[in-house]
Amino acid sequence: MNPTDPPPPTPPAAPPQTPAPPLLVVMGVTGSGKTTVGAALSRRLRVPFADADDFHSAANVAKMSAGTPLDDDDRLPWLRSVGAWLAEHAVGGGVMSCSALKRAYRDVLRQAAPQVVFVHLHGEPELVRRRVAGRPGHFMPATLVASQFAILEPLQPDEHGLVLDLGRSVDQLVQDYLAATPPSPTAPAEPSPGPQGDSGEPR
Ligand SMILES: Nc1ncnc2c1ncn2[C@@H]1O[C@H](COP(=O)(O)OP(=O)(O)O)[C@@H](O)[C@H]1O
Ligand SMILES: O=C(O)[C@H](O)[C@@H](O)[C@H](O)[C@H](O)COP(=O)(O)O
Image (cartoon, rainbow, N blue to C red):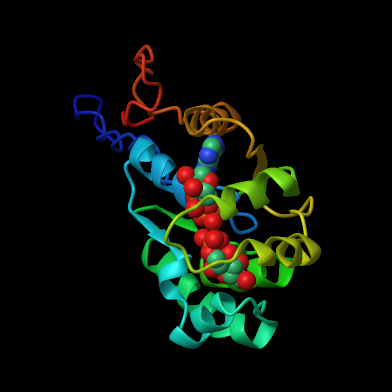
């Protein structure tokens, strides 16, 4: 190499790692607040929201409306369609509210979207029963709350997720999620929170 030759070009710096947008399943028994909190989280995180209630077959809805709990066979096709939505949103992120009561059900969802994070809203059965009894215009009777707690399997240590206290307000729960989830290194600085808490600003 001639000493007057220009130095070889340096390779371009690697672009900064942009973290994937969150892909969440807000899980828990009927009436735990999945729909309400899931929708608030999706606004805060600026990702699409879906409610697994809307993925049930008419037969499943009729069964629950009549006060009969679903069984594993009823739930499998439903979980597969919920998993398909998660897979479709794996890149852009999303929030799905889905009871996902058993480990095996969450395995179906993880198989479709391995990066999914579960946010379990957990709390007192009596508070949940009161909320379901007071919720207007929903097919789920309060009599099914007990059966949902009976089959609920909490997140296991190897499952990616966190547990939040459903007794807190919706704004508090959004903040609890954000506090438990470290901000990404490339995210802009957090603005000071407004008076209403859930400001809809991206994290
Ligand atoms: N954190 C909360 N604090 C007070 N009420 C809540 C809270 N989350 C949900 N609710 C109310 O409880 C009822 C059940 O909530 P919902 O989101 O429908 O639960 P799920 O989707 O888990 O069945 C609704 O009437 C809702 O307005
Ligand atoms: O697996 C089930 O038994 C159902 O999916 C149930 O868990 C779910 O809770 C109902 O769809 C009612 O809907 P909400 O949970 O929104 O009340």
